[in-house]
Amino acid sequence: MNTEDKGENAMANVLSLQVGRAKTYGNAQSKDFLEKEWHSASFKEVSKTPLFARFIGLDGDEVADTTHHGGIDKAIFANSYENYAHWASFLSVEHLPFGSLAENLTITGLHERSVMLGEVHQIGTAILQVSQPRKPCWKISRRWNHTAFTNEIFTSGLTGWYYKVLQEGVIGLGDEIKVVTQKNAHVTILEANEAFREPEKYRSVLETILEIPSLATSYKESIIKRLKNESDLSYMKTQ
Image (cartoon, rainbow, N blue to C red; front, side, top):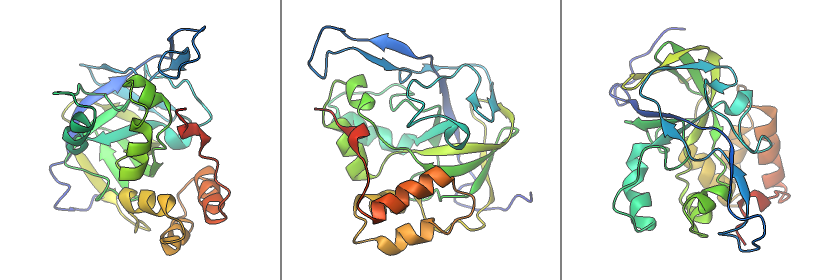
């Protein structure tokens, strides 16, 4: 692969690196959404040392819900630090710690409005491909005891994005993120989220996504269902 100089992305880098294990929280006897028992790996801990990015994810990281998260096509979850001020305001907190959105990589210099589906990034010695937007599920609402949080992420389009690992390697704090190629990449994460939210208005965008050869079959199937108005969005349900 030949690295191309993309200018605006030249200063993008990894601001923080997080991994976490799946654990059980809450009260098994409670029926209240904010109190009942739940299983999650969304409480990530900052790693001060570099981590090896394997095809299935970062060493030391787990996912609890393997139906909606994780796997080869959703190996690493990245989020833009530019969103943190917005979410701190929404959650009425003064400061959000790194990993607050359950992401593995907190990135500065990239955003949903600039990152495109299918583009390839080099981070450290790893080669990663932007595979799809993160689907916000109800667990992030539980993480912050705020029933409207999941829906707000979905509505805003500030979901973060998943990486597929094309070449295993080591990722560390401060690593520069280089755009290796943008071949066949024409839709940003924000545009993809906007189209998924309003499929009738942005049908042409969803149809363009289906033409991106590198994207996973499962993601394309979710787009087809959305076009047919057959999507199951119950993973976001907080009540």
